[in-house]
Amino acid sequence: RVIEACGSCATLVFELCPLVVDKTKGNRTLAGLLLCAILMDTQNMDAATGKGTPRDADAVSALSNYLQMTAEARADLFASLARQKQDQGHLSTRDLLRRDYKQFETCNTLVGIASVGISFSKWVNRCSVKEKSLSADILQAFSAEKQIGCLVIMSSYTNINGVFCRELAIFPGSSEYSRFAGYVWKAFFSILQFFKCAFLTFLQKLFGVSVR
Picture 1 (spheres, rainbow, N blue to C red):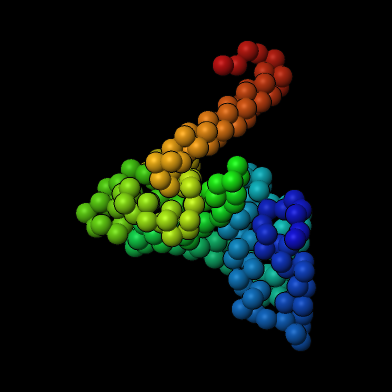
Picture 2: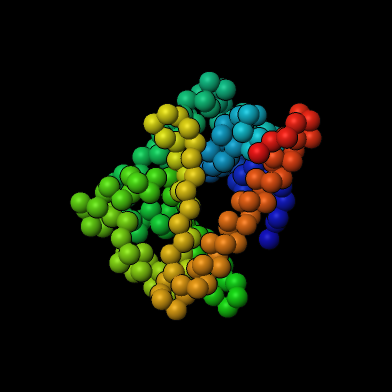
């Protein structure tokens, strides 16, 4: 297991497999996949997002050189990938939940976290097609499939005004986990409040004014 600070786990994979860009033993397919992952995780190394690190930059440079890809071509690739990432309308609710899914155990309870790229309102409006709807039955079936007591759904998307948004929903796998789901919700809320207070304190020190 490698746990180190970087913008993309694909960067760590690249560092462990440097031969992927070797002139004689390299693999263009694997190099392309690694580059795509790093570009998406770091927003094409956009400094404004603060997601990329020097290690990611080195990986992008090495992979791009091996693939003979210019900065302009890389930007076009990122734009294409971003559009495809946002196009999730064809996915069923089960596929949306499992496309970016992680699971862990805490307090003797399995918790699943699903990250989706669609707003809850848009998700609900797909109810005309049962397998695409955001229904309790489908969430219950998914929780049973994964054998989890609590399902956390994190939504991130860009709205019609171009503003990046996040939403959070917590679904208990069964009635016996309702109280546990409440604890999870309070924990997430406490974390958000902590970061909000820390950010406001930072602004207050930076500008020397009271910020609320």
